Structure formats: structure tokens, C-alpha cells
Length: 93
Image (tube, rainbow, N blue to C red; front, side, top):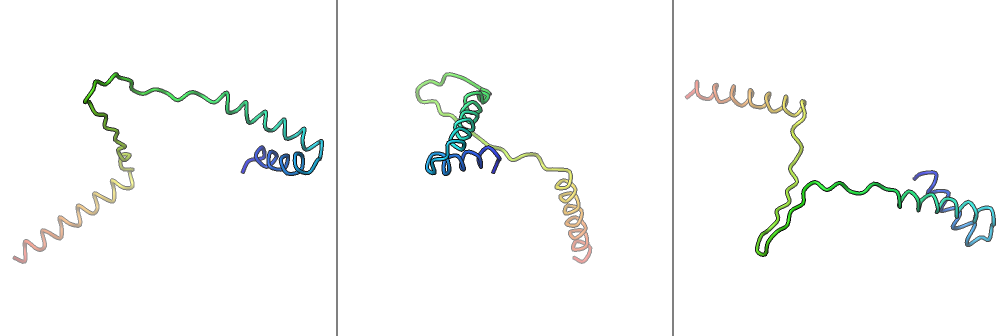
């Protein structure tokens, strides 16, 4: 939790419900800061916009990220192992 959220929680319990005037003032300030953060947050970026006709469908896909260097290395090693094993089995047959 952040310092601001702790301050808001204490202000609510000690200031509003507990009757402490300094905590109430701090709470008002903390909630004002939180409100400003919410109001000034950036708008989401539009990636694609198009008009669709009646009967058309929209397909949303979330593709996995490309493999990391470590994952690619593991795949190459596994391919080498399986090809060596296949060669050994072919020699026996």
C-alpha cells in the first residue's frame, strides 16, 4: 500500500469517525490528491477504429509474446536431443 492510501485510511477512521480535526483536514487533502490523480489520468490510446456493418463479426485475439532467448535455446537443445535419439533408433533398426 502507498503512503497516500494509508493516510486516507487513517483520516477516515481517526478524522471522520474519531472526531480528530487535524486528521480530518489531512484526509480532505489526501482525498483531493487522489481525486486529482483520477481526473488527470491519461486517456486510453485507440489502436484501431472501424465501422462494422450488420452481420459482420469482430474477433479479438491475444497472442502470446514471442519466445525469449532462453526459451529459444531450450527449444533448440530439445530438437537436437530428439534428432539424436531418432538417429540412434534408426541405426538400431
